[in-house]
Amino acid sequence: MSTTGKILIGIWIAGVTVAAFLWLPPAQGFRSPEAARIVVFHVPCAILTFVAFLANAGYSWQYLRARKPLLDAKANAAAELGMLFAVLATVTGSLFAMEQWGSAWNWDPRETSIVMLMLVYAAYFVLRGAVEEKGKRARLSAAYALLAFPAMVFLIWILPRIVESLHPTNTLFSRSGLDPAYRITLWSFFLGLLGVYVWMFRLRLQVELAEARVRQQHHRDTTLEATLAGETR
Amino acid sequence: MNPLLTYMLTPLLVWAGIFGYLFWLDMRLRALEKRLEEEVDR
Image: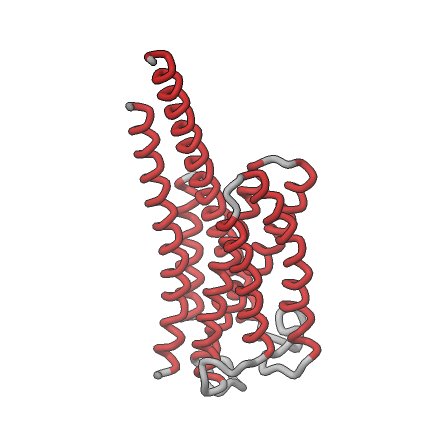
């Protein structure tokens, strides 16, 4: 990503953060109208968690069809970012819960489901760490990612809707939901975060490629050393 | 905690999480590039 792009993303997110503080009015109907503005930061993190895990499943599916190592690297990068945003959504959600419902953790269906989701994807990283052979690791983790995907959809979209929850549903799109000013700020912050997501994703891929080059160089060196040792014997 | 303080803490946490991860990636990339240079020199 170009430096100009990064600067623009930084300015955009900083601008939205300031706007949320200075322009957004305290929301009436909440226990803490001032703290209600937390939703404009919390909800985009939760949406990006879904986007990242969806990308993980997409790249895994593509990997199983094409067997290209780059697709496996992309799936891993997306899962890592999904985990990061899941943690951020949980922490910001806990701060909101503390103000709105009096306790940082209420075992609400959405709170429980995000913990289950993080455990599901933690197992993905454990699986990746447990298999040394690259091809096998990529195949197994891609298959696991495709199994985790329906669980993720169930935990994010279905479970919180079939049981009683403290979280409201359909507030993002329905007219009777969030105040328009809140909706504008929330989606603006989401756009900024999406830019940051692309930035982090590309940087993560660069790290993956650099690791591959180091491994390749190391392998070349050890092969050369072994050949030289064989010739001198 | 003061609700306004809680609210102000939220974007800071999001920023800290994002920049912490970016910083970690950048450090890792620099370390790998340095290692690659060393391997090439060797």
